[in-house]
Picture 1 (cartoon, one colour):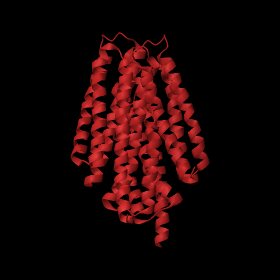
Picture 2 (cartoon, chains in turn yellow, cyan):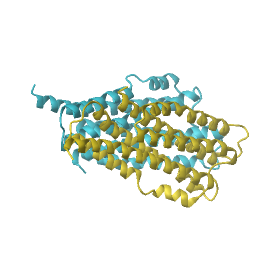
Picture 3 (cartoon, chains in turn blue, purple):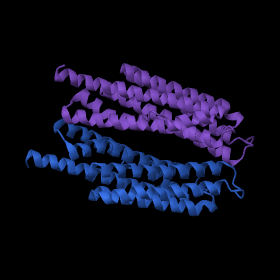
Picture 4 (spheres, chains in turn red, orange):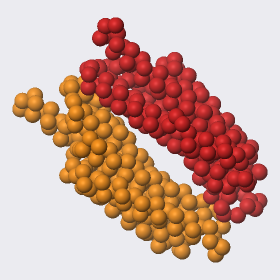
Length: 213
Length: 213
Protein backbone atom coordinates (compact mmCIF):
# COMPACT_ATOMS: atom_id res chain seq x y z
CA UNK A 1 0.00 0.00 0.00
CA UNK A 2 1.41 3.40 -0.97
CA UNK A 3 2.02 6.03 1.67
CA UNK A 4 -0.76 8.08 0.13
CA UNK A 5 -3.19 5.17 0.32
CA UNK A 6 -2.20 4.55 3.94
CA UNK A 7 -2.81 8.20 4.70
CA UNK A 8 -6.25 8.12 3.03
CA UNK A 9 -7.03 5.06 5.04
CA UNK A 10 -6.01 6.67 8.33
CA UNK A 11 -8.36 9.56 7.53
CA UNK A 12 -11.19 7.17 6.68
CA UNK A 13 -10.60 5.47 9.99
CA UNK A 14 -11.18 8.72 11.87
CA UNK A 15 -14.74 8.76 10.47
CA UNK A 16 -15.30 5.11 11.27
CA UNK A 17 -14.11 5.56 14.83
CA UNK A 18 -16.12 8.72 15.43
CA UNK A 19 -19.20 6.86 14.18
CA UNK A 20 -18.37 4.02 16.56
CA UNK A 21 -18.21 6.44 19.49
CA UNK A 22 -21.58 7.90 18.48
CA UNK A 23 -22.98 4.38 18.30
CA UNK A 24 -21.71 3.68 21.83
CA UNK A 25 -23.39 6.90 22.97
CA UNK A 26 -26.67 5.77 21.38
CA UNK A 27 -26.45 2.46 23.23
CA UNK A 28 -25.47 4.18 26.48
CA UNK A 29 -28.37 6.64 26.44
CA UNK A 30 -30.79 3.87 25.45
CA UNK A 31 -29.66 1.63 28.31
CA UNK A 32 -29.55 4.55 30.75
CA UNK A 33 -33.12 5.45 29.74
CA UNK A 34 -34.29 1.87 30.25
CA UNK A 35 -32.56 1.88 33.66
CA UNK A 36 -34.34 5.12 34.48
CA UNK A 37 -37.81 4.07 33.36
CA UNK A 38 -37.63 0.56 34.82
CA UNK A 39 -35.58 1.49 37.92
CA UNK A 40 -33.24 -1.30 36.78
CA UNK A 41 -30.07 -1.29 38.90
CA UNK A 42 -28.07 -3.80 36.87
CA UNK A 43 -28.84 -1.97 33.63
CA UNK A 44 -27.77 1.29 35.30
CA UNK A 45 -24.54 -0.30 36.48
CA UNK A 46 -23.75 -1.64 33.02
CA UNK A 47 -23.90 1.94 31.70
CA UNK A 48 -21.82 3.31 34.58
CA UNK A 49 -19.13 0.63 34.21
CA UNK A 50 -19.66 0.69 30.47
CA UNK A 51 -16.96 -1.29 28.68
CA UNK A 52 -15.80 -0.40 26.15
CA UNK A 53 -15.16 2.95 27.75
CA UNK A 54 -16.14 5.85 25.53
CA UNK A 55 -13.68 8.08 27.40
CA UNK A 56 -10.76 5.72 26.72
CA UNK A 57 -11.74 5.27 23.06
CA UNK A 58 -12.04 9.04 22.76
CA UNK A 59 -8.57 9.61 24.21
CA UNK A 60 -7.06 7.05 21.81
CA UNK A 61 -8.85 8.62 18.85
CA UNK A 62 -7.60 12.07 19.76
CA UNK A 63 -4.05 10.78 20.08
CA UNK A 64 -4.25 9.16 16.65
CA UNK A 65 -5.56 12.38 15.13
CA UNK A 66 -2.52 14.13 16.62
CA UNK A 67 -0.23 11.44 15.14
CA UNK A 68 -1.71 12.00 11.69
CA UNK A 69 -0.99 15.69 12.10
CA UNK A 70 2.58 14.92 13.13
CA UNK A 71 3.29 12.49 10.28
CA UNK A 72 1.37 14.12 7.45
CA UNK A 73 0.70 17.71 6.57
CA UNK A 74 -3.02 17.71 6.15
CA UNK A 75 -4.50 20.75 4.41
CA UNK A 76 -7.97 22.09 3.61
CA UNK A 77 -10.70 19.46 4.11
CA UNK A 78 -8.25 16.97 5.55
CA UNK A 79 -6.95 19.44 8.08
CA UNK A 80 -10.53 20.33 9.03
CA UNK A 81 -11.21 16.63 9.50
CA UNK A 82 -8.20 15.99 11.71
CA UNK A 83 -8.63 19.03 13.94
CA UNK A 84 -12.42 18.58 13.89
CA UNK A 85 -11.93 15.03 15.13
CA UNK A 86 -10.35 16.37 18.32
CA UNK A 87 -13.32 18.62 19.07
CA UNK A 88 -15.92 16.07 17.99
CA UNK A 89 -14.31 13.37 20.08
CA UNK A 90 -14.48 15.49 23.18
CA UNK A 91 -18.21 16.16 22.57
CA UNK A 92 -18.88 12.45 21.96
CA UNK A 93 -17.08 11.56 25.19
CA UNK A 94 -19.19 14.14 27.02
CA UNK A 95 -22.37 12.54 25.63
CA UNK A 96 -21.23 9.22 27.10
CA UNK A 97 -20.63 10.99 30.42
CA UNK A 98 -24.14 12.44 30.38
CA UNK A 99 -25.65 9.00 29.72
CA UNK A 100 -23.72 7.83 32.78
CA UNK A 101 -25.18 10.70 34.84
CA UNK A 102 -28.68 9.52 33.87
CA UNK A 103 -27.75 5.97 34.90
CA UNK A 104 -26.27 7.19 38.20
CA UNK A 105 -29.50 8.98 39.06
CA UNK A 106 -31.49 5.84 38.21
CA UNK A 107 -29.20 3.71 40.39
CA UNK A 108 -29.29 6.15 43.29
CA UNK A 109 -33.10 5.92 43.56
CA UNK A 110 -33.66 2.29 42.52
CA UNK A 111 -35.63 0.16 43.28
CA UNK A 112 -37.83 3.26 43.53
CA UNK A 113 -38.33 5.02 40.21
CA UNK A 114 -36.31 8.27 40.00
CA UNK A 115 -39.09 9.84 37.96
CA UNK A 116 -42.57 10.64 39.31
CA UNK A 117 -45.31 8.99 37.26
CA UNK A 118 -46.72 12.23 35.82
CA UNK A 119 -43.29 12.91 34.30
CA UNK A 120 -43.11 9.54 32.56
CA UNK A 121 -44.48 10.90 29.30
CA UNK A 122 -42.05 13.79 29.04
CA UNK A 123 -39.05 11.66 30.04
CA UNK A 124 -40.04 8.96 27.58
CA UNK A 125 -40.18 11.61 24.87
CA UNK A 126 -36.79 12.98 25.96
CA UNK A 127 -35.32 9.46 25.96
CA UNK A 128 -36.69 8.72 22.50
CA UNK A 129 -35.39 12.03 21.19
CA UNK A 130 -31.93 11.41 22.65
CA UNK A 131 -31.73 7.87 21.25
CA UNK A 132 -32.97 9.01 17.82
CA UNK A 133 -30.49 11.88 17.84
CA UNK A 134 -27.51 9.70 18.70
CA UNK A 135 -28.57 7.10 16.13
CA UNK A 136 -28.95 9.76 13.44
CA UNK A 137 -25.56 11.17 14.44
CA UNK A 138 -24.00 7.74 13.96
CA UNK A 139 -25.45 7.59 10.44
CA UNK A 140 -24.26 11.13 9.66
CA UNK A 141 -20.70 10.19 10.67
CA UNK A 142 -20.90 6.83 8.87
CA UNK A 143 -22.12 8.42 5.64
CA UNK A 144 -20.30 11.78 5.93
CA UNK A 145 -23.71 13.27 5.32
CA UNK A 146 -23.70 17.09 5.30
CA UNK A 147 -27.46 17.33 4.76
CA UNK A 148 -28.12 14.96 7.63
CA UNK A 149 -25.79 17.06 9.78
CA UNK A 150 -27.85 20.15 8.97
CA UNK A 151 -31.12 18.37 9.80
CA UNK A 152 -29.71 17.22 13.14
CA UNK A 153 -28.91 20.77 14.18
CA UNK A 154 -32.54 21.76 13.55
CA UNK A 155 -33.81 18.75 15.55
CA UNK A 156 -32.15 20.13 18.69
CA UNK A 157 -35.22 22.37 19.19
CA UNK A 158 -37.41 19.29 19.85
CA UNK A 159 -35.40 18.56 22.98
CA UNK A 160 -35.49 22.22 24.01
CA UNK A 161 -39.30 22.15 23.82
CA UNK A 162 -39.47 18.98 25.93
CA UNK A 163 -37.09 20.56 28.43
CA UNK A 164 -39.50 23.51 28.76
CA UNK A 165 -42.49 21.13 29.12
CA UNK A 166 -40.67 19.37 31.94
CA UNK A 167 -40.24 22.61 33.89
CA UNK A 168 -43.89 23.48 33.36
CA UNK A 169 -44.86 20.18 34.98
CA UNK A 170 -42.34 20.54 37.80
CA UNK A 171 -43.57 24.02 38.69
CA UNK A 172 -47.28 23.19 38.43
CA UNK A 173 -49.28 23.67 41.61
CA UNK A 174 -50.26 20.02 41.45
CA UNK A 175 -46.66 18.81 42.05
CA UNK A 176 -46.89 16.71 45.18
CA UNK A 177 -43.59 14.88 45.37
CA UNK A 178 -41.51 17.38 47.29
CA UNK A 179 -38.04 18.74 46.73
CA UNK A 180 -35.81 15.75 46.05
CA UNK A 181 -37.76 14.26 43.12
CA UNK A 182 -38.10 17.77 41.65
CA UNK A 183 -34.33 18.31 41.79
CA UNK A 184 -33.71 14.84 40.34
CA UNK A 185 -36.06 15.60 37.48
CA UNK A 186 -34.54 19.02 36.83
CA UNK A 187 -31.03 17.56 36.68
CA UNK A 188 -32.14 14.59 34.56
CA UNK A 189 -33.83 17.04 32.20
CA UNK A 190 -30.61 18.94 31.93
CA UNK A 191 -28.61 15.78 31.20
CA UNK A 192 -30.90 14.93 28.28
CA UNK A 193 -30.91 18.51 27.04
CA UNK A 194 -27.09 18.69 27.18
CA UNK A 195 -26.83 15.31 25.43
CA UNK A 196 -28.87 16.63 22.47
CA UNK A 197 -26.97 19.92 22.54
CA UNK A 198 -23.61 18.12 22.29
CA UNK A 199 -24.98 16.06 19.39
CA UNK A 200 -25.90 19.32 17.64
CA UNK A 201 -22.36 20.60 18.26
CA UNK A 202 -20.96 17.47 16.63
CA UNK A 203 -23.36 17.86 13.70
CA UNK A 204 -22.30 21.48 13.21
CA UNK A 205 -18.71 20.38 13.22
CA UNK A 206 -19.31 17.60 10.68
CA UNK A 207 -21.00 20.09 8.40
CA UNK A 208 -17.98 22.38 8.72
CA UNK A 209 -15.59 19.55 7.86
CA UNK A 210 -17.60 18.51 4.82
CA UNK A 211 -18.57 21.90 3.41
CA UNK A 212 -16.14 24.40 4.96
CA UNK A 213 -19.18 26.46 6.00
CA UNK B 1 12.40 37.58 11.88
CA UNK B 2 13.42 34.06 10.84
CA UNK B 3 10.74 31.50 10.04
CA UNK B 4 11.80 29.59 13.12
CA UNK B 5 11.44 32.66 15.31
CA UNK B 6 8.02 33.39 13.80
CA UNK B 7 7.00 29.82 14.54
CA UNK B 8 8.19 30.06 18.16
CA UNK B 9 6.28 33.27 18.47
CA UNK B 10 3.06 31.74 17.12
CA UNK B 11 3.39 28.97 19.73
CA UNK B 12 3.99 31.51 22.49
CA UNK B 13 0.88 33.33 21.36
CA UNK B 14 -1.24 30.22 21.89
CA UNK B 15 -0.32 30.33 25.58
CA UNK B 16 -0.98 34.06 25.83
CA UNK B 17 -4.38 33.71 24.19
CA UNK B 18 -5.40 30.71 26.28
CA UNK B 19 -4.47 32.72 29.39
CA UNK B 20 -6.55 35.62 28.07
CA UNK B 21 -9.58 33.33 27.66
CA UNK B 22 -9.10 32.04 31.22
CA UNK B 23 -8.89 35.64 32.44
CA UNK B 24 -12.19 36.42 30.66
CA UNK B 25 -13.72 33.38 32.36
CA UNK B 26 -12.52 34.64 35.75
CA UNK B 27 -14.12 38.03 35.09
CA UNK B 28 -17.32 36.40 33.78
CA UNK B 29 -17.79 34.13 36.79
CA UNK B 30 -16.96 37.00 39.18
CA UNK B 31 -19.53 39.30 37.55
CA UNK B 32 -22.10 36.50 37.29
CA UNK B 33 -21.61 35.80 40.99
CA UNK B 34 -22.06 39.48 41.88
CA UNK B 35 -25.21 39.52 39.72
CA UNK B 36 -26.43 36.44 41.57
CA UNK B 37 -25.72 37.65 45.09
CA UNK B 38 -26.94 41.22 44.52
CA UNK B 39 -29.80 40.31 42.12
CA UNK B 40 -28.21 42.88 39.80
CA UNK B 41 -29.89 42.76 36.37
CA UNK B 42 -27.49 45.04 34.52
CA UNK B 43 -24.49 43.11 35.82
CA UNK B 44 -26.19 39.87 34.73
CA UNK B 45 -26.84 41.30 31.28
CA UNK B 46 -23.25 42.41 30.88
CA UNK B 47 -22.15 38.80 31.42
CA UNK B 48 -24.81 37.44 29.06
CA UNK B 49 -23.93 39.91 26.28
CA UNK B 50 -20.31 39.71 27.30
CA UNK B 51 -18.09 41.38 24.72
CA UNK B 52 -15.47 40.32 24.01
CA UNK B 53 -17.15 37.00 23.34
CA UNK B 54 -15.25 34.07 24.77
CA UNK B 55 -16.87 31.78 22.21
CA UNK B 56 -15.67 33.91 19.27
CA UNK B 57 -12.18 34.24 20.72
CA UNK B 58 -12.12 30.48 21.28
CA UNK B 59 -13.14 29.76 17.68
CA UNK B 60 -10.41 32.10 16.36
CA UNK B 61 -7.81 30.50 18.62
CA UNK B 62 -8.76 27.02 17.48
CA UNK B 63 -8.52 28.09 13.84
CA UNK B 64 -5.06 29.55 14.40
CA UNK B 65 -3.91 26.34 16.10
CA UNK B 66 -5.08 24.47 12.99
CA UNK B 67 -3.16 26.92 10.77
CA UNK B 68 0.01 26.29 12.74
CA UNK B 69 -0.48 22.60 12.19
CA UNK B 70 -0.99 23.18 8.46
CA UNK B 71 2.07 25.42 8.02
CA UNK B 72 4.50 23.76 10.40
CA UNK B 73 5.05 20.20 11.40
CA UNK B 74 4.99 20.41 15.13
CA UNK B 75 6.34 17.39 17.00
CA UNK B 76 6.59 16.26 20.63
CA UNK B 77 5.88 19.08 23.10
CA UNK B 78 4.94 21.49 20.34
CA UNK B 79 2.44 19.05 18.86
CA UNK B 80 0.99 18.46 22.33
CA UNK B 81 0.66 22.21 22.71
CA UNK B 82 -1.11 22.75 19.40
CA UNK B 83 -3.56 19.85 19.71
CA UNK B 84 -3.98 20.55 23.44
CA UNK B 85 -4.93 24.13 22.57
CA UNK B 86 -7.95 22.84 20.66
CA UNK B 87 -9.22 20.84 23.63
CA UNK B 88 -8.34 23.51 26.19
CA UNK B 89 -10.04 26.19 24.15
CA UNK B 90 -13.27 24.23 24.03
CA UNK B 91 -13.18 23.79 27.83
CA UNK B 92 -12.44 27.50 28.37
CA UNK B 93 -15.36 28.43 26.10
CA UNK B 94 -17.58 26.08 28.09
CA UNK B 95 -16.54 27.82 31.33
CA UNK B 96 -17.67 31.13 29.81
CA UNK B 97 -20.98 29.49 28.87
CA UNK B 98 -21.46 28.27 32.44
CA UNK B 99 -20.82 31.77 33.82
CA UNK B 100 -23.54 32.96 31.44
CA UNK B 101 -25.92 30.30 32.77
CA UNK B 102 -25.36 31.66 36.30
CA UNK B 103 -26.04 35.18 35.03
CA UNK B 104 -29.20 34.03 33.21
CA UNK B 105 -30.56 32.51 36.40
CA UNK B 106 -29.81 35.71 38.30
CA UNK B 107 -31.54 37.80 35.62
CA UNK B 108 -34.57 35.51 35.47
CA UNK B 109 -35.31 36.00 39.20
CA UNK B 110 -34.14 39.61 39.67
CA UNK B 111 -35.04 41.89 41.39
CA UNK B 112 -35.76 38.96 43.71
CA UNK B 113 -32.61 37.09 44.75
CA UNK B 114 -32.34 33.70 42.98
CA UNK B 115 -30.76 32.21 46.09
CA UNK B 116 -32.59 31.71 49.39
CA UNK B 117 -30.84 33.43 52.29
CA UNK B 118 -29.79 30.23 54.07
CA UNK B 119 -27.87 29.25 50.91
CA UNK B 120 -25.93 32.52 50.76
CA UNK B 121 -22.96 31.09 52.62
CA UNK B 122 -22.55 28.03 50.42
CA UNK B 123 -23.02 30.01 47.19
CA UNK B 124 -20.57 32.65 48.35
CA UNK B 125 -18.06 29.89 48.99
CA UNK B 126 -18.77 28.35 45.57
CA UNK B 127 -18.38 31.76 43.91
CA UNK B 128 -15.10 32.44 45.69
CA UNK B 129 -13.81 28.99 44.77
CA UNK B 130 -14.77 29.44 41.11
CA UNK B 131 -13.16 32.88 40.89
CA UNK B 132 -10.00 31.68 42.64
CA UNK B 133 -9.85 28.64 40.36
CA UNK B 134 -10.19 30.66 37.16
CA UNK B 135 -7.64 33.20 38.40
CA UNK B 136 -5.19 30.44 39.30
CA UNK B 137 -5.80 28.86 35.90
CA UNK B 138 -4.94 32.16 34.21
CA UNK B 139 -1.63 32.23 36.11
CA UNK B 140 -0.91 28.58 35.25
CA UNK B 141 -1.38 29.35 31.55
CA UNK B 142 0.57 32.62 31.76
CA UNK B 143 3.51 30.95 33.49
CA UNK B 144 3.26 27.50 31.87
CA UNK B 145 3.34 26.20 35.41
CA UNK B 146 3.14 22.39 35.63
CA UNK B 147 3.17 22.38 39.44
CA UNK B 148 0.38 24.93 39.57
CA UNK B 149 -1.58 22.79 37.11
CA UNK B 150 -1.21 19.81 39.42
CA UNK B 151 -2.36 21.84 42.45
CA UNK B 152 -5.42 23.05 40.54
CA UNK B 153 -6.54 19.50 39.83
CA UNK B 154 -6.45 18.73 43.56
CA UNK B 155 -8.42 21.91 44.36
CA UNK B 156 -11.38 20.58 42.38
CA UNK B 157 -12.40 18.57 45.47
CA UNK B 158 -13.16 21.81 47.37
CA UNK B 159 -15.96 22.57 44.92
CA UNK B 160 -17.20 18.97 45.09
CA UNK B 161 -17.50 19.28 48.89
CA UNK B 162 -19.43 22.55 48.58
CA UNK B 163 -21.70 20.95 45.99
CA UNK B 164 -22.49 18.18 48.49
CA UNK B 165 -23.11 20.74 51.27
CA UNK B 166 -25.57 22.52 49.00
CA UNK B 167 -27.62 19.36 48.49
CA UNK B 168 -27.61 18.68 52.20
CA UNK B 169 -29.17 22.12 52.78
CA UNK B 170 -31.66 21.73 49.93
CA UNK B 171 -32.88 18.39 51.22
CA UNK B 172 -33.06 19.45 54.88
CA UNK B 173 -36.50 19.26 56.47
CA UNK B 174 -36.25 22.94 57.27
CA UNK B 175 -36.30 23.94 53.56
CA UNK B 176 -39.34 26.21 53.26
CA UNK B 177 -38.96 27.83 49.85
CA UNK B 178 -40.73 25.30 47.71
CA UNK B 179 -39.80 23.72 44.40
CA UNK B 180 -38.67 26.52 42.12
CA UNK B 181 -35.94 27.98 44.35
CA UNK B 182 -34.74 24.43 45.08
CA UNK B 183 -34.43 23.67 41.37
CA UNK B 184 -32.69 27.01 40.73
CA UNK B 185 -30.23 26.25 43.49
CA UNK B 186 -29.58 22.71 42.26
CA UNK B 187 -28.89 23.94 38.73
CA UNK B 188 -26.77 26.86 39.94
CA UNK B 189 -24.79 24.42 42.05
CA UNK B 190 -24.23 22.29 39.01
CA UNK B 191 -23.05 25.28 36.95
CA UNK B 192 -20.42 26.14 39.56
CA UNK B 193 -19.39 22.52 39.93
CA UNK B 194 -19.03 22.09 36.15
CA UNK B 195 -17.08 25.36 35.95
CA UNK B 196 -14.50 24.02 38.42
CA UNK B 197 -14.50 20.63 36.73
CA UNK B 198 -13.72 22.18 33.33
CA UNK B 199 -10.92 24.18 34.96
CA UNK B 200 -9.49 20.91 36.30
CA UNK B 201 -9.72 19.43 32.78
CA UNK B 202 -7.73 22.37 31.43
CA UNK B 203 -5.17 22.01 34.22
CA UNK B 204 -4.74 18.31 33.46
CA UNK B 205 -4.22 19.16 29.82
CA UNK B 206 -1.63 21.84 30.61
CA UNK B 207 0.27 19.37 32.74
CA UNK B 208 0.21 16.90 29.84
CA UNK B 209 1.53 19.52 27.42
CA UNK B 210 4.34 20.54 29.76
CA UNK B 211 5.42 17.17 31.11
CA UNK B 212 4.03 14.58 28.67
CA UNK B 213 2.50 12.80 31.67
